[in-house]
Amino acid sequence: MAVAAEQPPVDLREPAGWRRTKNNVATVLMWVAFVAVLVPLGFVLYTVISKGAPSISGQFLTSSIPPNIMPANFGGMGPAIVGTLEITALSAVMAIPIGVLGAIYINEYGGNRVLARIIGFMADVMTGVPSIVMGLFVFTIWVLHFGYSGLAGAFALACLMLPLVIRSSYEMLRLVPDSLREASYALGATKARVTLTVVLPAAIGGIVSGSLLAVARATGETAPLLFTIFTVEATNTNVFSGPDTALPNQIFANATQPYVGAQARGWGAALTLIAIAFIFMIAARISTARFARYSR
Amino acid sequence: MSAAVKADPADVAGSAHPLAQRRPLGDRVFQILALAAGLLVLVILVLIAITTTQQSTSWFSHEGLSGIFSTNWDPATNSFGAMTFVYGTAITALIAVILAVPVSVAIALLLTEVVPRRWARPIVYMVDLLAVVPSVVWGLWGIQVFAPWVQHIYTPIASGLTGIPVLSFFFGGTNTSGESFFTAGLILAFMITPIVTSLSREVIATVPAIDKEGAYALGATRWEMIRGAVWPHSQGGVVGSVLLGLGRAMGETIAVALVIGSSPTITSHLFSPGYSMPAVIANQFGEASGVFRSALIGMGVLLFAITIVVNLVARGVVDRSTRRARGA
Image 1 (cartoon, each protein chain N blue to C red):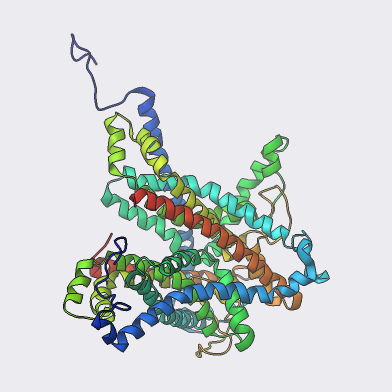
Image 2: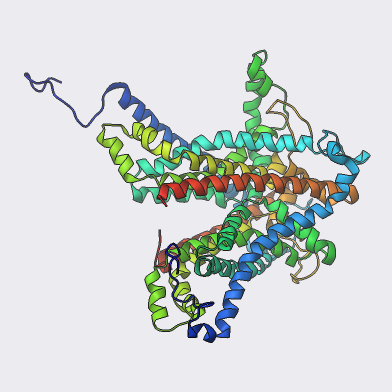
């Protein structure tokens, strides 16, 4: 491009030649990486929806689990859905208040204390403990003495959720500006009162959101439930005693069944499970968007 | 009040101040509750170590230290060596990390350095969707759809590579179902990508803007800026996030249990079926009792110990590098 005759044009903006090529290749590769993630995601979601949707009906969601040899349109996953909802709710009731309290200790009372830093660090480490280890733990400490029950499963899920709730609540409490706390102290409020009536409400959007994400994660967990609730076909409305069942356990059991009907019910259960997890995730996003006053 | 510690207006306990005596009961009770909740984390971790180790003692005394690490696993003859499963866990986790890390770091760079902020959010949502798919659904999809599908790819690769020294060592062998170390590793890679991406992104986001602007001012392209300013700064943290992904991959149970092929063998052939520690616990616990059950719980103890060490190191690395990045 001969623009100027006397002076060669100096392009200050664009590096030329192989440097530009290298830059473009790197950018393209980054997009390729993103597409590489979308492909399995799309593949798995498409399969679950296309194979699971035909099973879903009012009957599927409510009626009892039939023997595996029964054809596809027979029976449903009612007991497993009831079990999943009960066990997850029970574990949330245990883990969320304790987790939020733990986060309050780390952020509001801990200050620079070594203990608070150790607890925060170990909570992070605890998020990395495999879920199956939590199942074995509850088996050895609870099931061996009191037998299989939904409650035992809820303990295992609560152990998984606890560090997640602590982590996310701590992040949210940290964002609440100190001026809010100082203003309340200036009015003569005690620390507990400041924390409960000023700091917590200010951070509640984020805390709810983080807790819902932890619940969503726990809903899909199978490994901790295998050794704690056992897996039965009948509905067990009493979460506190007797073997129970849940959606992930039924999917795990049906995945290796040779019968078409059992497989179809497995896919239906998978779609139901993903839908439940999704609802929690969307609720979390709404909570962040609507109620979070301080965000990152 | 020392200069280093931030003054806490409510912290009057222990001082000679008259208010210290009048701290209401409810206030103190609340503080104790919060402390108890925090301590619960430590209590649970210690209890996990104690109770599971207790239940696995009969395995340790039955097999001895050398027996634990033997390759002989045969419940019918009361032989419970864990080495095959340790090998399978290590191999599948390594495959997962090797596949997931470049992709995750590339997406993290895409999010922080390439796309504008308002585009970053939907991309994050989509990557996070991978984490919403439960492990058991990955397993169901893996055993019924993915494994039969990749089987069609494995066979020509394996036959095409026969005779080539290194490649046939890894990719030779026969497979009839598609359930293998490699299939398990692939699915693990999908599963750990969201966590590695989000942690790497957090680390990369701490790179000071002034370093990046400096690189641009010297005429660097974006890639040169990433190599020169972003990478040296976030290297340590990215290593930490990779280790966390590794820990996640080693502990993942149900998806692996369904697609690894459940065959306790040690082989270099990645397309052959194998077994891993969490998978064998999940599959065989129901029918186990006595030493058998003790051995499975003992494997859980091994898994717990390994993942705790990996996580301690990883968290240490991540914490140190982010703290250094913040300049504190």
